[in-house]
Length: 351
Image 1 (cartoon, rainbow, N blue to C red):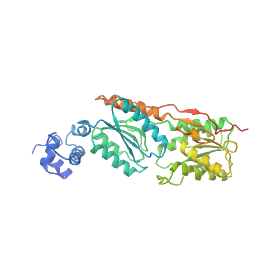
Image 2 (cartoon, one colour):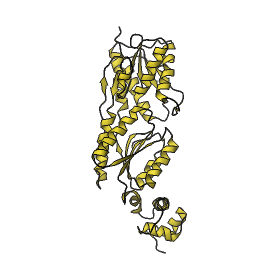
Image 3 (cartoon, rainbow, N blue to C red):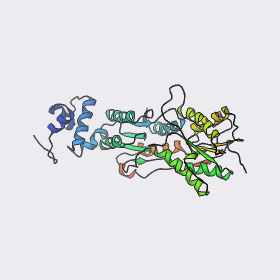
Image 4 (cartoon, one colour):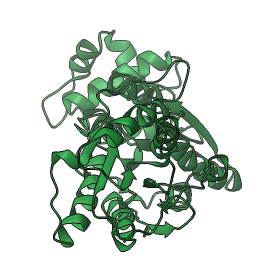
């Protein structure tokens, strides 16, 4: 039996995939003989894993791709992620593409399964907001010829993808700097769990940078963090987390006068919790959010926030992806947007 440059045969691939040599041969020779999509995927994955042929690494997702953009988001409960999806869909619709939007429900395990489902469906473009600590699933997708844009991840930036990440450090810095400019010196940061979430840690780093730049103390006492994270069955997770943390901020002996929230949904929850505890926003305490989701008119007072231009960033990324053709190597320059402060009514000047 003929061996390739690595000394492997089709029988090796068949053994790895758990199929007959004949079936493996039909797939590896690109025969038109009918083979199920699941079996075809297993064989191509086995060949790529063994290094049977350099060309096979690209065959699975490059040949006969479905004209879809695969989109995976951590949750659809937070409108911040909906802004990414809306931006992608606007471009896809305009360019004659369709989107295949999937929700990982904040689960790394489910995210891996969803990436695998894109492989099974031969969808060769992925726009990802990851909650996984490992990039193994992403690397596997790339090895099979897929192209990916990463908007958010917990692993280091990958040189073979289009990185289009919100500048969370700058967003946190801007939000905190605004409170400082309005005379606030005791500032709390309200956040969802930081562990394993790079974007949240970057936001906190930006807040800390601004506070320490003004020669003010910063410690764990400034941080009010939700104890856990999960999709809410009957409500909205960030709203509920913010509501619960608001009272803890009010009860703290540091007597905070301003709060920076990791995102706008947390901020809406915090404002509701403050009102429920008898505090007035902004007379008693000021609140700043991050994201500028389009719901600011649904709360009173209207929320001051930092616009991260998520929808515009998503549009730019999607535009690059739908026009990739075969020139993929020239589309790895990172994309970013400069966050901007949006002043409304939830901050009061003091002092």
